[in-house]
Amino acid sequence: MASGIIIHVTVGLEKRTEFFAQERIRIGSDSTCDIQIHTSSVRDVNVWLELDSSDGQYRVIDFAQELGFEINEKPLRRYVPVSDSDTIAAPENSISFDFFSLEAKSALITTNRAQPHISQFIEDAAIESYGSAKRDDAKAFLREFTRELAREISWTTKLITLVIVVAFLTGILYIGYAVNKELKEAREQAKVQSETIKSLEEKLGQASTQLGELDKSNKDIIKTVSLAPNLRVAYGNSIGLIVGVYDLVDRRNGKVLRYADPALYRSPYEPQAPENPDALPSRPQVGVTTDGNGPTVEYDFIGTCFYVGGGYVVTNRHVVRPWEEDDGVKQMMAAGNARARVKKLVVYFPNHPQPFPLSIKSLGTREDLAVGFIDPETVPEDLPVVPLDTDTAAVEIGKTVVTMGYPNGPDRLLAMVDDAEARSINQRFGNSRQDLINFLAQSQKIVPLTTQGSITDLDSRRIVHAPAPQRAAPARRYLDKAAK
Image 1 (cartoon, helix red, strand yellow):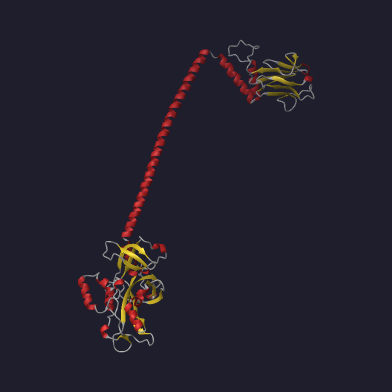
Image 2 (tube, rainbow, N blue to C red):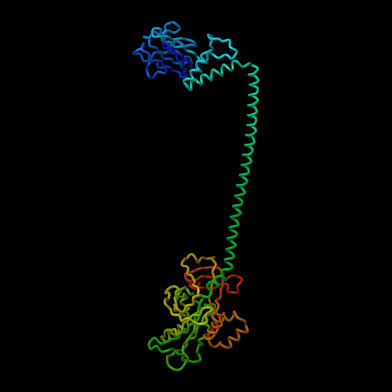
């Protein structure tokens, strides 16, 4: 099978050698031909010869019959194979084409030179390719040169070379196999290490998460345990002690009600709110009048409020209108057609000896709430503001709750001092609760009671609060939501 063909062209005295590797070759004067020949002896003929090697051998598939082509001095026919050293000529026009196959060994040219045998057409092709600098000709030359050189090497040399090449290739393959094996083992080890590292990272992440949760739990515990002391430090000075006095006056003439029977006189300093409201005893029917010189119907009251800024305080309605919760007072008011009149209403704050006059700005109609007001100009600058939480979800069963206030009034305040000092104070001011509270304020002994526990139950108006076990307190205490 031909891998290419060399065509030696002679036109008159001009000669040229060309190499072709494609399957189809066209020769003529047309610009599309592979070999273009321009001669005045041939006119009006564009394509002279057309060769094709589709079956592995070059054949003449078409030619210009008017040029009188011959092949090896015999008339040319279509599909005639072109072999090595064949000549196709047009004698009348002094044109000839000599063909040389690259795979055919020359039998016409020999030499007695000592150097290795090189075919004459290879020399011509080498010279021609050097002069024309055509890439295909250079390839043909190198191919034929390699083939001729291989023919000149002895079988012994070839065998030794083959053994060396095989040994070299074997060594390369062995080294490649060893390197590939090492790389494979390294990749497997790297994969195992990567999986180990990934597993350790997952465990480390889990441990970190657990530590984070534990730290959060510890912080929550610490926060819960220290909640009451922290709130006492932050807002204790804003927990005010309300002290007030009210009497009863006739609705018609505004005169003060008096006890008709001095024996039924009720001291204005006796405690008004027992710890258990359900245990409040019913009062006997008491006669009252606006005439005479009997003692006036007068009561004092105490309670807790919270300073919320701007001069405003928040407390309970029943704190500033205690007569609405006292059945005995309500009976006297009904009997004497009387109304309650507040004679005095002040608020004491811890660490401040002087009371602040208090006025009521708003009272709740359904909720047990009341909003009071003190002059902002008189409010101390260091008085912290208690924040109000408007989120209803803040009050839920199970949540921690801290209560601060003054249950039982001065009795609870005296319980915080030494027994001997408490007895001494009682002896001096026991007959006047107003004087007692004023003395405690001057002595900076007004300190709110702080109790921490959990919400155990809720209803529309109350929060059931179970104090922490470590505090000596009732098992259950009912606290109005506004007093939180």
